[in-house]
Length: 167
Image 1: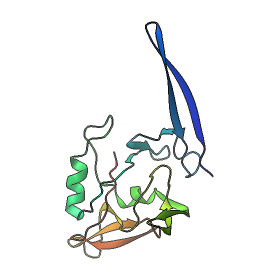
Image 2: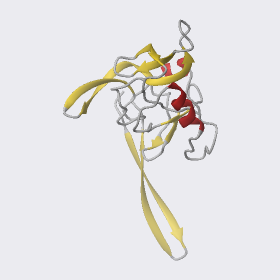
Image 3: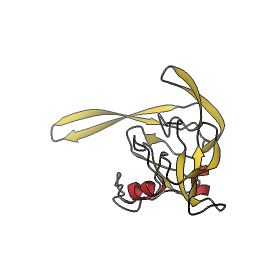
Image 4: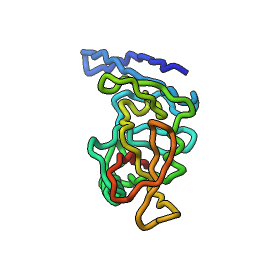
């Protein structure tokens, strides 16, 4: 499904004067019922199927497994001042698109298995941490999801990956 954008004109009246405001809403490329229309400037989006709220823009620096938990634990976005955390393996997999889309990144065409409207500019050069330890070596490896391939894999907990927090 292609992205559709709806524009709504809002008229705010302040005493004798009125201000006309353009609000741009968007719909994600994911299944039509996964995300409602959302404000393009919002830092948070809700998945209607799971009820989870997702951070739309992750930090620009990668972190290790423990650093991901620390970052999310200190995060404050929109109306959620506290309660952010690293998603579980199963939660993060709900963001993997069944069909990839392509984006230009640094002059190169890159396939991405994450909704480009809901999560614009999602970096796919690194995997994204989950809170789930890898059962084969739980003390040294954790699961991460690669949105360039759509595949989860075990990563060394000391390695640097991206984190996208959930509420």
